[in-house]
Image 1 (cartoon, rainbow over the protein chains, first blue to last red):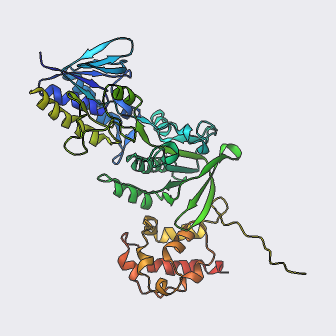
Image 2 (image 1 turned 120 degrees about the vertical axis):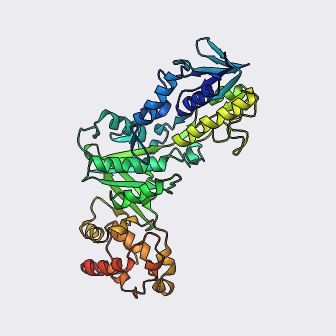
Image 3 (image 1 turned 30 degrees about the vertical axis):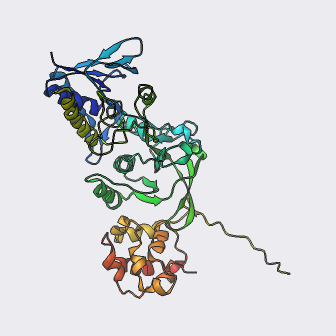
Length: 334
Length: 111
């Protein structure tokens, strides 16, 4: 029997860490709070920048996890870090020779930006809601009509002192561009406007997709943050912004306002802090350093991988899943 | 009637619900690459006319794309068609053609 490693969280980072550790002869145990593996990615429809269906990424991964015979415990929410393992709600314990925390992030609660009326007005939705609609195969306004005009608002819950978030959530820009294109494909006659403060296209193919959104899909990009939204006639939403490139206020009514919500540190981070780990000012877990120590917690035997330490895309999270296996193997002398 | 120096200001907000997009859409159909503008301002920075007058090519074509045509024609009159803007544009937009199209299409909107 190999050395046991407790993996907190069964999203893409946790699954990759488990697979890599298993290949090195360890016995990973995935402790997942949800009722299935896959994490936040499982709620998505298609992935940027290639419009790859989620099942094409998650399907083979889940199969590999199953074939590797990795021990999985779902419905097990970690409550505290204890000596040599974790304690879960309801009284159970999982012990191992090392612990890898891959519990990811929380989605920003758009209701906190009251001025946009999420949960109050009809037809103000979030990117998460839109992915669910794509998955259900039915995108329409609350009134049941096809949207003629859709506005996307970038940076909801990111780069905003008012919600205590100075950080950039990194993946939302490209998500907004991807969803704008998907909406245009669904409703070719619709006008789509993306309101942004900066467009940050950090990955390969992202900037190219942004250019295609402009040229091939006629998406309108307006530099300016929507200051407020209000309910208009027939369930429409009136929005106000400044078009900062012309230096004038701008107003319009749209059939649907999509809030591109950001990432925040996971709610479980507080319990890790109680266990002696460090939460950074931005609410994510603080790795030892952002370079060679990016998967180290600073505490012996405890490691990180994925979006628990910062907003990351799937590729970054998978890389950290592999990288953490290296460091755990070194620590356990595998 | 005595004048006291008071007047009513016109609203400055660009209203996308009421603006007429037909000329703007025609311009974009003929020069679709204009949609790829990332508003870097290279054109305006290098502009010979902008160095001497208030001409701001980036701003004027953005206004036109929002359906704001007032003064666009007169503004474009300041352009000397030297073509430096086209040389520096990172998106490869035929900026001189944009100037000419705006002049051709928006003559009716001059005030």
